[in-house]
Image 1 (tube, rainbow, N blue to C red):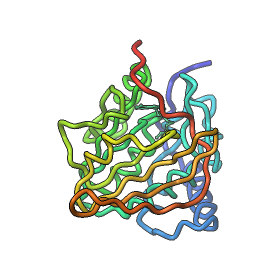
Image 2 (image 1 turned 90 degrees about the vertical axis):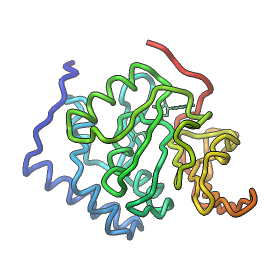
Image 3 (image 1 turned 30 degrees about the horizontal axis):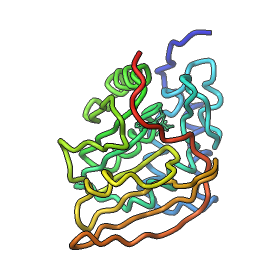
Length: 222
Ligand code: SAH
């Protein structure tokens, strides 16, 4: 199996992408900016060539290293909860394939993302550069600790399932900002949105259930 990436975006891909956008719209995503971003980004660039035909199904898919590229609906759902403004500084935990980071970068200027697995980090960092998302700042590290050097962030997005909310991420939120994180003790998580108010106050909202790969402590080296 070739690991060569297919970096050609054809009319066929564009057509498949339009259908994907309609599917996600019908499932309840109304934010036009997000639908447009999904319509623009060649999702097949983020999968190995052999799996190209899977890129435009509304499904999660394995990307190697026991990880998955999130389902497009889930990407849109989490992104919608972030209520992004173009000027927001956003931190993503769990870079994975880089697709979610690309969606964020279509919507705001400053995107930071952390991946714990060094092999994925290296692969995705070079892919993002190659396909025009070189301004996304990609880091190798334990996202549970956030990225204190660049805090505070207006928005923080966790794309792996957490047993509980890591306190460092709440610390690194700007006042008026929010953290979107799937939290659960079993293999199902409830999507939470936690807003940070003045003087260390937080307000938590609960949304739907999802199944993410687990948020793990520490890093994995090559
Ligand atoms: N956002 C990704 C989905 C990735 S799946 C995409 O669009 O493709 C979740 C990712 O989180 C995996 O790559 C996993 O290795 C990573 N991860 C798990 N725990 C982590 C941690 N503590 N810090 C950073 N990344 C983590």
